[in-house]
Every structure is written in structure tokens, then in C-alpha cells.
Length: 282
Image 1: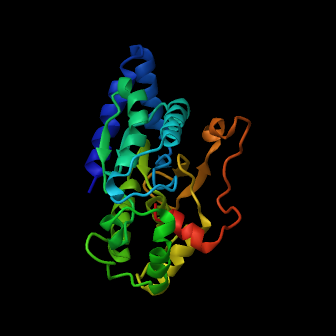
Image 2 (image 1 turned 180 degrees about the vertical axis):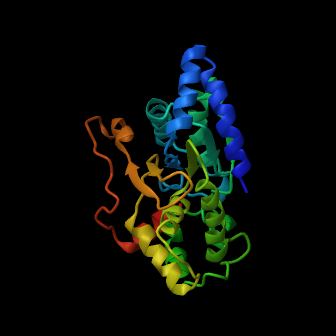
């Protein structure tokens, strides 16, 4: 689906980025990469804090904006990517406002490198039909969220405007197939449930979508909280294979009053299920 984007972008980005160097250095870098290769790296970034994440009432999942804190988180993400991944080849973003606004900070810092931005279907899993009907907070939506997961009907959407779990997983599968073919470094600005679905799928040898599968994913989601502005660094051998990943948050430490905040654990202590599910719906 997006493989051509990745192949074309990889070549063009290398040329536009390295043309700034002298010819000798330019050729040396090209030969080194051809001879040694680079381990593909995917940076899965959860958008900065949104109005919904902050507990405010919202009605349209697609157009929820960032808070002031979310803008700062987006800025720190951009600085971290520029510092640690200067050879970034492609920026991918969800079509949802909160993800696009987060990505814009990184786009600005890589504008001089000619790194392109693409919109892929990495938007959040919106499974509640009633969300767009009126303004509501995450707390007010909690009963509907709990009911949806308790029913665990993967093939039936909640109603108009909602996506079924089966369709959601199919969408994630197609994106993962393309990410498995990448070379170089790609930053994907997305959402908690979508990122978790990618990680969950990377651990499945085979998959049949049914009620138990849906419950298994919910348990994975509960066990892998990803803070707003966190970077999930994924690496694997060229050509696909098992994903190796870690959740990085140290770049956000200035927002916590400074200090040396260590990277988040992949499996921190669990919070009550109702709170986790409500938070994940944002």
C-alpha cells in the first residue's frame, strides 16, 4: 500500500540530506550504508496531551486539539528526534488533528533536510458511535467504554461512524506489512490504541479475530500504557522479523520539573481497569 512511498523517500532523502556535505564525505557515507546496511528503525509517537486527555468535553474525535502542555510535549519530541535520529527519512502522521499538530514540530525541525510527510491510516480506533453526538468527557463515556469491551463483539460496529474491532485490526495489519519493509528511519505520529495494536500484532504468530482475541488485545492495551508524547522505538532486522521495542519518555522530563526521569517500563504497575479503558478511548 505505501511501499513505494518508503522506497522513493529513502533514496530522495539520502540525496537531499547528504548533498550539503563535501563530495568525499557524501560518497563515503553512501558506500558505508551499502556495505553495512542500517537496521530499520520505526519511531511510534503518541500525540501530545489532547483536550480529551486533559478531561475536557469533546464531541468529534477527528478534530480534538492539543492542550498547551500537549504542544510542549510535541516540541520536546521534535527536539529528541532531531538530536538522536538526524538521519530521519520519512514522517508519517494520522489524519486526526492532535497527531498532525504533534507532527508539525518535527516537520519544522527537518524542513532543511527535505524530509517528506505522508498521511497514512494510523488514526485512532474510534469504536463509540455516541461520542460524536454531543460533548462529553472521558469520565462520562466510561460506562459506554466498559460495555463495549465487555460485549467483545469484534465484527459489529457500535453504530454509525464507529469502526468495528475486526476492521481496526485489518487496518493495523496493512500498515504493519508496509512498516516491515522499510529501510532507514521513519517517525509515525499516531495514537495509543493504534500503537499498541502494532506492538500486539508483532507478537502474534497467527491470529483469528473473535471475542477472545478482542479480550486479549484489551489486556495487552491495559498492560502497556503509553504516555502522551512518548516515543516507542522499534527495531528489527532488514526485511521484517520480530519487533524489538522500548518506550522512551526521558525527553519529557523537563515537563516533570526537571531531573533525570528514567525511561518508562514496558509493564508498569496496573491501574484500575475502568480508568485504563476510559483513558485509552482518548
